[in-house]
Each structure stands twice: as structure tokens, then as C-alpha cells.
Image (cartoon, rainbow, N blue to C red):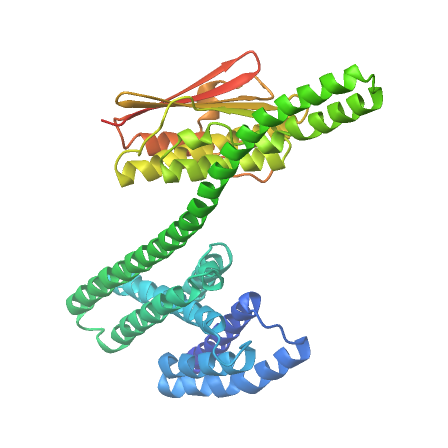
Length: 425
């Protein structure tokens, strides 16, 4: 009798601690903050009710009521998918951990004791805490495709709800349980794959829209660049004539003003930062080059760009995107190294096209610390605080997929050189 009373007391405390833990975790990730007094008032009011529901009708109904109450109290707007999504994630992980615990104990024939239950509870709470607080599982709810991710969370929650139901109502049918568990697991991975696919399509759509906008800008830029070059030629001739005329009249002040005006406008690097860019006919490549050259100009990084031959369309779409990714990483590395170096920073880049082959070269001054190319290619290496250091490691991963891409790196006399050759036929 005494042992039964102890079990009932322990079970009651276990339910209260579990509900309290879920509430505490939610407060850690909730978007809407309430005062400690309001939080305590909610806690004191709901804990007895939820505990009674849990003991009388089970955790499914209890969690449904808890999620509903928390959503109504802590939502930031009438339809708040971010808050509800957080609650569903916490509920799903709780269901998942409970199902795993049951599967372990049932499979190995473990008989519950108070000590074992305390141990499993601690393991479960630690697992839930680490999953919620130490992984990016919440973050997608607050991003652009948050509603799509929320839909996935609804699906996952319903999946684990079904698993949890089977845990408590099909205990004797272990084979059926395992089969259904496998089915739900497959469905879960399919749902995650579907979400990632939708997310990728959305990103590609935004990228293509940005590309269309940049095409318009690029076309106008080329027209302006050609007009500027023509104007530069005519204007220099005009200045020479004016200077000769002024010299004949010995007008030193006019000569000085003409030179000052000429130097200010004709030597302005901003007017000529996109020289040779009109020889690049591939829209994706041109867009990338304009973007990176403009970044260097805005950051006051001395740079030169050369493309003396016409560069037509890049190869098929799949490899084209990866070529652009590699070049983007290479330019970003050069820009990062230049910003670190500051004085003496310089970037030289070149694109060259010959029959059946494209060559790209990006050279930049950098702070040579004596690191070898092999060390620079390691995952996580970086010289910039707060940077992920995935540059050259990412390039290596991308180029492995294609025999048509050759990438080389060289370090010599304070210069880092990135070279890429691509077979286009």
C-alpha cells in the first residue's frame, strides 16, 4: 500500500514537472514577452488544470489544451504562425522523445522503477533542451519561407501524435508498431525533403527575378560605358585644342583650370570601373562580375578587370550555377583578404575565352602568414573573426562534381592567385 502511494505521488510530481518544463522551454523561445508576474499567474492557474486533464484523459488532450492556451496568451497577432510553430515543434520533440523511450524500454524488457524513471526523465529533458536551444530548428519559422516551414511542422506534429497514440494503445502489437513507426519516419523524411525543395525553388525564383532586374541595369550600363568612352576621346581632343589656344594667349589660369577639370573627370575611376565588361555576353557571369567589381569600388579596393575576348554563353545550366558559385567565393575571398590588408590591397581579375575553353584568374595581395595551400583548403580555416571559413573548402566540394572544371591556387611574392579553367565543349 505504501509502495502504491509512493508511485502515485511520484507519478503526480512527474506530470507536474513535465508540464512545467514544457512551459519553461516555450518561454525561452517565445517571441512575445510578458512580465514575470503574468507568467507566474498563468503557471499557477493552468498547472492544476493541465495536471488533472493529463491524469484523467492522457497527454494528448492535455497537450492540445496547453498549446491552445499558450498560443492565445503569447501570440503577437491574430494569426501568428511563428508562435504556434514554436509550440508544435516543442510538442513534436516531446512526442518523439517519449516514443523513443517507450521503444527502448519495451524492446529490452526494462521494468520501470522510480530510479529508472528519474533517469529516463533526465535524459528526455536534456534531449529536448538541446534540440530546442542548441539547434537551428526554430530559426526557419522567422525567415522568408516561415509559413511553408510551419506547414511542415503541422505535418510532423500530426505524425508524432499518431506515433504517440500507438505507443499507448498498441503496446502488445510490437511488430505493427514498428511497421507504422517506419511508415511515419518515411513520411517525415519525405515532408522534410518537400520543404527543402520548395525552399530551393523559392530562392531560385527570387534569384532569377534579381537577375532580370540586373539585366536591365547591365544593358543601360553598357550603353553609358560606350558613350563615355566616345566622349572621353572627343573631350581630350577638345581639351588639347583649348590648351593650345590658352597657351597662345598665355592664359595660365585657364590652363590650370582645364587640367584640374580634366583630371577630376577623366581620371575618375568610377567612370571606368566596368571596362571590358561588355565583352562578357553571358548574363549570369556578367551580373556576378558587375556585383563584385562594384563591391570593390565601394570598398575603395584598387582593382583591375580584363576581358579582351568575347565570352559567349556558359555551359549547361547546372554547371553554370556552380561556376558562378565558385567565382563568387573566389572574389569574396579576395575582397576579404583586401579588407584585412588595407594598405597595399589590390585585386586583378581576368576572363579569357578560347575555342572550347574558358579561363578565369583572380589575383589579390594578402597577408602571407606562411600557411600552405593545403591548410587554406581545410574546412573552417579563416583569417577573419566571425567568418565561417568555408571558402576554399566549398570550392573543392563543388569542383569534385565536374571533370570539366580545373581549379588551381598559387602563392608567390605576397600574391594569392586563383585560377579556374572550364571546358565548354
